[in-house]
Length: 366
View (spheres, rainbow, N blue to C red):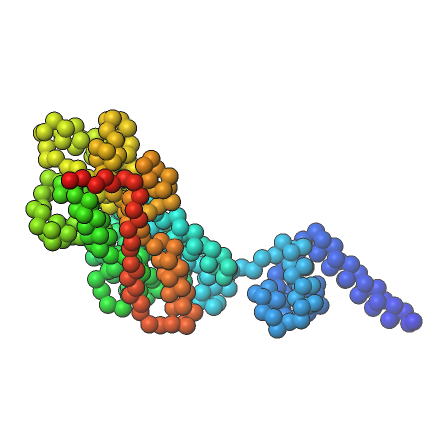
């Protein structure tokens, strides 16, 4: 071998050794180009392997992925999102995440997104329009591909903001009063009507309605269903038996601890049953019963709405109206992803049915 050729071989060997050292010590900026050099492939082949494109051979792809793992290299998904005009991020904006009502909905959405390598951003608006607007702006600034939102109110500038920015959106719980939107929800009015009909069928005509803050759409709809059933059965609507509260255990506890002693003393209108706009409020009624010493359902019948996971385990188990929370999650994320991927550009308005779940918290009276 000539001296010139030997020298070239030594230089080549040295360069190769340097690369191995840098590979092990991570002394270089690790990027697609560097991985291509180390793996002896092209940048396009590395790129395809990293994003799971099966056009590269299995052996080559495994080699590239092994090198990437050894170098602790992960693709810059934000930069990729900017190039592709997608970030593979979905925003979820709900009200009162402390409420177990949302657990099943969030869980099924998260499972579907994980399977598709999407990331989920979760925000709580806590029934506050200003906080909801802040959450929407945050989602826009993060470049989310779309949002699933339970709006504070069906008429607000926040809904107009979502529409004006062209953000893919699916509404749950409530349906905004506007064209060209996607929503998946149930009729809260139908739920209240069904529950009131059930209580009247059990002999109750003096029914205390315990609903959420008056300005909320769910509270208004629930009131309408309650009033409709009373009217149908010829029972006068007594507004003294309509109470508004924060939809929490404390909210239900507080109202009943105020109302029940007055009922007992004859200082306020009598009532034999309580219809609650949420199971959390109903649990609050149970708490008040322990403190005041009355029994459910012997002294007071109680009915909830949502059918959250703990209602069968209460003492007594709570009679409630079931909302299909898992199905709401499945349909809403499917509609949203179909729009993002341009598989379906139609607008979907889906109303799901509620159903009665009869347990042991309502007593039949004469």
